[in-house]
Length: 459
Image (tube, one colour):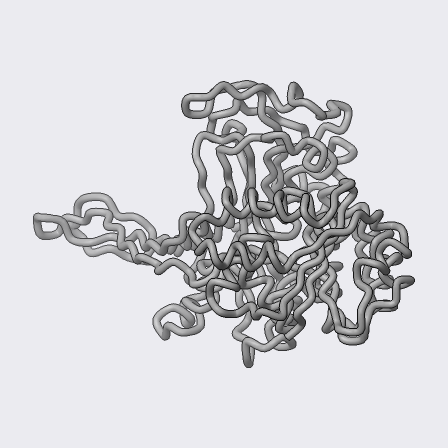
């Protein structure tokens, strides 16, 4: 287990909101020893005491569920160096030492190439690891180049292209529910499943993130990485094991089987939109274009939807609908598996019948099944919903992610070829949208999204 973690971009929201609480969770669970050391690096002209005061405040705010002793242990193990991540000498000072270090790049994707180059010139200690947050690159070409830079720095097994979605309990339950239940796996195919919705809709608006979000947009921020990863787990063939190679190979198979989208497909099967002013709950929300830091010329979308099909034996004709949006009426974060209607119902029945829908709730975490049952009167059908409670995870998603990084378990990180294949899937969409082949629609903040549109879907 590596006992040194260096976070570049250590004074940002990711560190304060997620990485420091993740470390506190590990410490509280007894999975972070007294020998652990954290070095924060950032642009702020701070010393170690100032960073520790800031870290204490962040942990008090975002990790209050963990014991004070665990939070204090994380703070006392930390130090800080002001560093320009593009300066090899400054980076070398952060990672200096004989023991291996996990270098966590909590940085904007545009900075990754320069930071990786600086790490190369800084001469990382043998056995070190590199951690990169999503999205990996800004397009296919930049992902390929970044992979080349990383290959010159450390072995592929030492590169962690992390996606905290893969560490969420319910996300892992998608795979577990499929593979560990005899009644599900035989019907987990196009013969029985008509479509699968993979949805991450938020009532949260921009909330001061224009500096990042306006240059990225919904398609790159959520759909290209997070939701495609969920697609892989939902659609993959059963792996021989849950080890690094087997799991990643099967995920790559899914991405390679995605049917390429033509311009005609993109017009019919994708949507993009952004929110106008509106009201969400008890708060007024300004239009996206009125948010501070937004460049209206970019025409950045806050809502994205893409329908995909897979060309393989298991899924011919099943529609996979990936959708994400901000400033919507309610939060909806789930994988919804829509089974086909039964082929025949007995004559003389009455009442409402519904197709079975298995829903994996991602946030909050739950599992529900919509089905049809018998009502109070014979021959009368009524809709029923079964709900399963999922016990809270022992570690938060970032706690599990950090544990895997420090332990060297790369099974839930994204391999280089998989990262490139994900960009290949959506590159035609990005290109078409940049040419306004698909109109940029609008929807009021607090609504359910852009209005209905006649959609010609596959059979």
